Amino acid sequence: MCLFTKHNEILTRALEEIKNRGFWTPYFEIPSSKVYGEGKKEEAINSFKSQLNNRYEIKGLDIDKYLGAEKSPYGFDLGITYPSIDADILVENSKEAMNQWKKLSLDERTGICLEILDRINKRSFEMANAVMHTTGQPYMMAFQAGGPHAQDRGLEALAYAYKQLSAIPSESIFEKPTGKDNPPIVVNKKLKLAPRGISLIITCSTFPTWNSYSALFASLVTGNSIIYKPHRNGILPIALTVDIAREVLEENGINPNLVSMIISDDRTQTQNLVKNKNVKIIDFTGSTSFGDWLEDNAPQANVYTEKAGVNCLIVDNYDNLKGMSRNISMALSLYSSQMCTAPQNIFIPKDGIISNGERVSFDEVASMIANSVEKLLSVDERAVEILGAIQNSDICKRVEKAADIGEIILKSKNIKHPMFENATIKTPVIVKVSAKDKEKYHNEHFGPIILLIETESREDSLKVWQETVELHGAITAGVYTSDEEYLEKVEDIAIEEKVNLSVNLTGHVLMNHSAAFTDFHATGDNKAANCALSNDNFVSGRYSVVTIKRDA
Image (cartoon, rainbow, N blue to C red; front, side):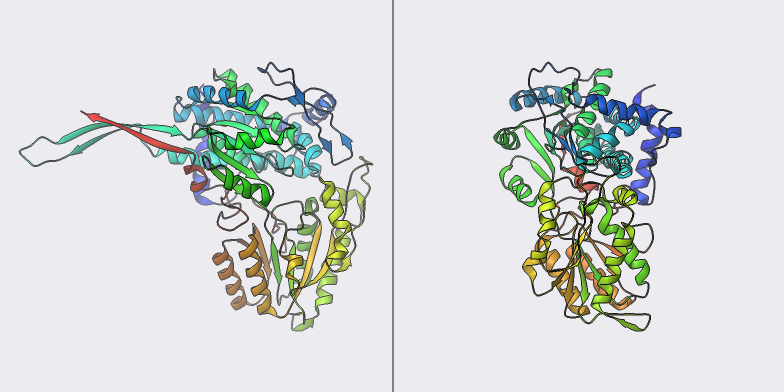
């Protein structure tokens, strides 16, 4: 059975779901042995342990140089080294492989990509350990976000790519009448896919697979080759991805160098690769400074960036403060706010709000939120499965200096992990700030640093929120209000500033959540990101169509 036929049912459903925008996934998100196989969890743990302090060998590469210095946020060095290949050699290998790949039919490329996704899914337990011990995500999140949810994103992008290319015929006949007594003008046309070139994917330290699989499969289906540049502390999940992809490619007679990765301790080499004339697509998730540099220094490439934004939440007159506080506490605590969708700035009027007909002061609202966070994280064994671990020492330094920002409402505390005694785990610090002190909240404080911002009024909350998003961008925004007229103003601003909005969430769904096939992750139209995962625009810049015509 050909791979396209094998996976056609999933593709057909995916094509429907990108139109429906509801809930759907073919990849089970619970780490169940009944789904993924008896003993697979234990096998994955043993596999991870066997990789520690060893070389990660990738089949088909003859290498004598290995690099790597990853450290688990849970308190130990991985000691894994990876094949390091010169950038110029990688580029030449990638070009050669792409020449073969682009000649395959759309169905052939798509079938192979679906098989790669299927193989990655079957190794989700392995991916969970790789993601957990490079990013610091708690285990359940590492399994879900690093595994099935990332695979969903890849499948979603694949479906958009297939939809676009399948709408273009490979051949057509142009036949134009010239009058009843004259023969028509007939021209035969061939429409040929022209991939842009090498696709360079530069991954982040927090969500290496979730943030990159859209780019990986959008570029592959449209005929491009891939060079991954993983973050220096997030190599293992990408190495596993590359290894699986190369295995599937080789099994199907495709040059495995179609998918490769560069591991380098030379910053200049990476910058030169970015500027290489053969690199025609760059996908990047990370800091604003490097994202801006990429956009300015790679004119030969289409550059897709997700950078830092400032996500804000407005607390207005609202009746269900208990449900609000509970939901917000989880949104602030999940993975220690190391998510690009997590709220940072919470705007509350200085005179408080009205709830169930009674005035609730700013301090009372702040206390409710702080108490909810404390209650949520009061039991260490539960807290570590929510917070995960801090993946960057700079975050710890910022948390320790939070008093420089404003008045501390809730102190951060260190938590001991029952299994990893050297893990770096901190609860959120909550700080009170005046809306007048814009320099304190008009930038991203990445990590568990939450700002409760005292505004002059309900209307001022709208004003300072809009100003923040306009200047710095945002991936998400949220509001709690029982006033429909006020909500309409909030929605108008969200649309004007092109930021996704969550309204009155009190259940299991958080402002942070972004799911494939239903949410467009980012809008691609404010300073936080110039693309959305995934839509047609995310795909269309990865290829062109060349028409070859001749008289019939």
